Image (cartoon, rainbow, N blue to C red):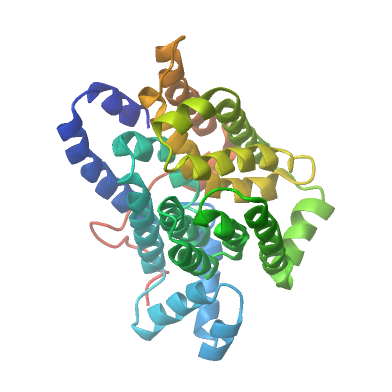
Length: 350
């Protein structure tokens, strides 16, 4: 990761080369994520879902939660493709969505690199259902910026077909039409209700509440990630908001809403840092947008400090996590890949 940051620093001011390197890094990260073998904390959990999908009927998949995900697993069985291909599919969706949002950035290489330390490592390389949902939500964010309400709703609903928690973003639909009038804010609040009901309904939400709230189970890493998001949101609201509105009026509304959501998610830590963390992952692309565009804002005091701080902070967080966390050691090391051939032991292949 530190090499990625140094690469971005070395390409400062070389816009054409940055664009070329961006596609190389995007392709490399896709291959790194998609073709991992027994890497990621959720590897075995999704393998059991893959096995379960073989016993599931088409009707059961369509009427259940996250129907698109279960249809994909059934499709793998139908075409006699084995479990590791589910990681390829989810990674392809994630990085396609990320690219859809990155190409709108003045510095798409910086945007992509800033996603790596937390989002890419934890989602398409572990929580692949939510990783796919985040990629699709990036397309929804792009539609929001363009004020394409139907397209925004479509991509959000598709994302919900992978991970039901994405449905909470349907509440933003009225605000995608333009300015925040009282009527649109009221409609947005009303639309939050069905999104919350979708998230709260069913056995999965009951299990999550029992596991993360009633049992008192928590995670220091989750609280730390939520805290980083909350600080990012406060930084934008307190210092960058006016400057951003002047420089980037088209996507000011989306980023402003995202910054407020970052702060609000921080308030969930006393209830359950894990649930707040899961929702917070959806906001990391907006956080990366904020950090990547700092060099384009009119900053008079300590400009270089503001530009460098996100990179230094994320590098420090990633270094401490990789060196001290048993979670990282158990889930991500050693890194293995089946890109250049299948391992000797093939328990996941039909």
